[in-house]
Image 1: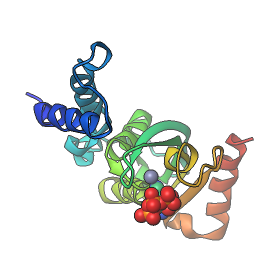
Image 2: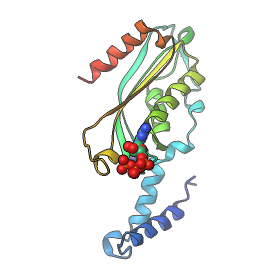
Image 3: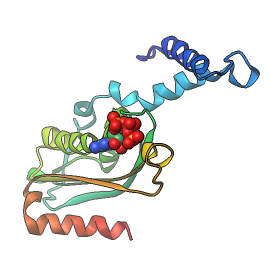
Image 4: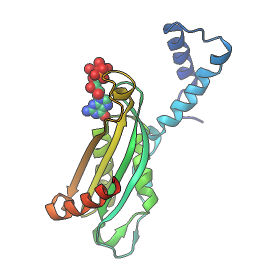
Length: 190
Ligand SMILES: Nc1nc2c(ncn2[C@@H]2O[C@H](COP(=O)(O)OP(=O)(O)OP(=O)(O)O)[C@@H](O)[C@H]2O)c(=O)[nH]1
Ligand SMILES: [Zn+2]
C-alpha cells in the first residue's frame, strides 16, 4: 500500500483547478488530479526512505583515499513554491579504515533527500551528514549545483542562474584535501 494519501492529493488538485478558474470536469483535465497524485508520490518518495538502511552494507577494500562521484543528476522540489529545482550533485568521502560503500549508494543517497520538499542548502548538508553518520568517514564533501524554476519561470525570472552550495566535514576541511576534491569537481563543470 502507498504511504502517500493519493485520494487526498486528488481532492486538493481538483480544488486548485477550480480555484484558478478551470473546469476540472473537462476532457483534458479529468484524469489530471489522479496523475498529479501519482507524480507527487514519486516526487516525495524520499520521505519514506531510510538512509541508514541504504548505507548499511559496506565492504573493506583497504582504500583510504578520496572517493568522489561527480555529476549525479537530481530533481527536487523547492519547499517554498513546490516547483522543481534540479541540477547535479558531487559526493566525495575518504573511507575510514578502508571501508567503502557501493558507488550507486552515493547517488541513491542524493535521491532520498532530493525527493522531498526541500531547500538546496538543507539537501547539501543532509547528504554530507548522512555520510558522516552512517559511514563514519575520515572526511566528506558534497557540492550541489542547481537551477531553481521558482527563480526562472516566475518571480525574479532569471533563467540560467545557478546556485552552488557545498558542505565539508572532517579531513576534507583541510585546505589541501579540500582543494584536491574541489578541483576534481570543478573539472567536471567545464
Ligand atoms: N536559500 C534558499 N532560498 C530558496 C531556495 N529555493 C527557493 N528559495 C527562495 O525562497 C524565497 C522565498 O521568498 P518569499 O519572499 O517568501 O517568496 P516570494 O514572494 O515567492 O519570493 P520571490 O521568489 O522573490 O518572488 C525566494 O527568495 C526564493 O528564491 C533554496 O533552495 N534555498
Ligand atoms: Zn522556490
